[in-house]
Length: 135
Image 1 (cartoon, rainbow, N blue to C red):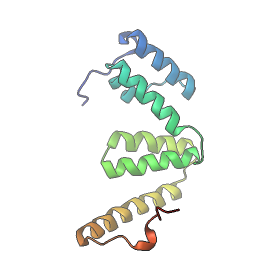
Image 2 (cartoon, rainbow, N blue to C red):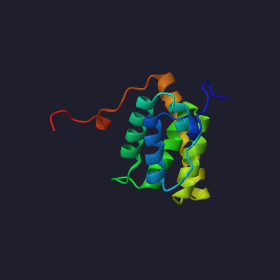
Image 3 (tube, rainbow, N blue to C red):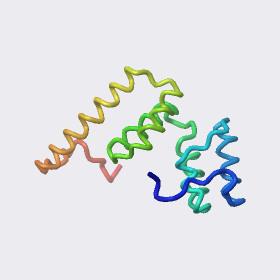
Image 4 (cartoon, helix red, strand yellow):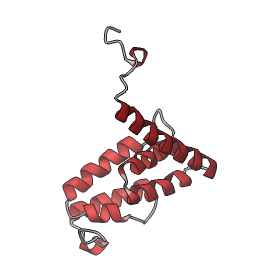
């Protein structure tokens, strides 16, 4: 259950309405999800977050599907059920296959295990892995 009321379109401030209009335009959809509806209570945070998401998730050096898959992996690591679901849907919409999803989950699980082992063992980083500051 949300800790704030999810605002309907009729309850939005003018500033929040402008952000929702941009979300709909950019995503080419009338759907505005609950994350944005919760953030709409604070239009400044809503706008800042939306602008950052647009920039980070826009096409760039990484394929949009890969960006969504990375978002899922980080969301799993942080235990964010909402983001796991929304970005899995986004990755699937961008072409992620079930095989890719399975491999990604295997990597997330393996990384979680080995991260904990290396942390527990306090393994020092190999010199070969360090970036030479002189270069």
